[in-house]
Amino acid sequence: MWYEHFWCSRQIPEVEGRLRQFQNQVQSIKLDAANIQQKTLNSLAQERNAHQVCLERLEDLQRENFALMQSRYLESGCDDAVWQRKIDALPSYETLYSFTQNAVRKFSDLKWTLLDREREASRAELDLIAAQSSLLVTHAQNERLRIKLGETRSRRPASFHGEDLTDRKV
Image (cartoon, rainbow, N blue to C red; front, side):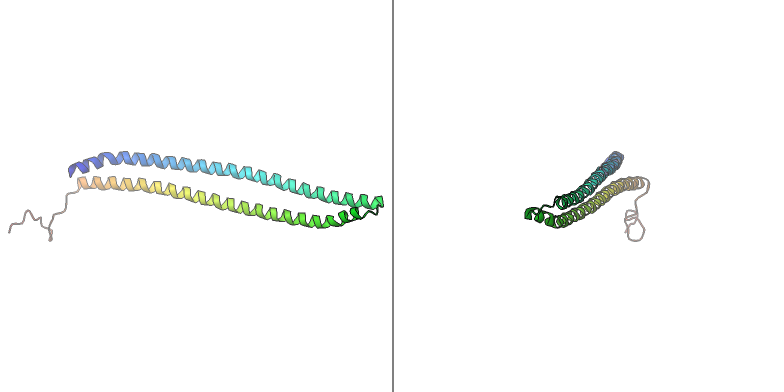
């Protein structure tokens, strides 16, 4: 029995040290993950801004193209039915293009929402792991203190009325 106590009193500080080392590693990983997430969000924000600028420029070019084609058709005085159908179809094409761009924007917004939720879930998971590692260190410290108290405290008498059974003679 004493050897178990001896083993525990020698091993607990080592376990405690390793748990603290683990806790420090978890904190380091948590900071690294936060930095990586921030860099990812920054690059995605730049990508989103570049995409938005390209879409706006493309829409401007589409409008200019439509206006240019319409003005050239009207200036030419051409009475070609094929050209007339193309000019008449451009507003439908513009409407379809606008609808598609709105769908792309909504999907992009949904993507950003999901990325934010994923980032929050990852952060919460890392916080939970950090809390668990801290709790492990605390439990190890409590166990060490319990064993230390057991060394200094005398054992309770094994009796029903506060008397030691070995002192009692029947």
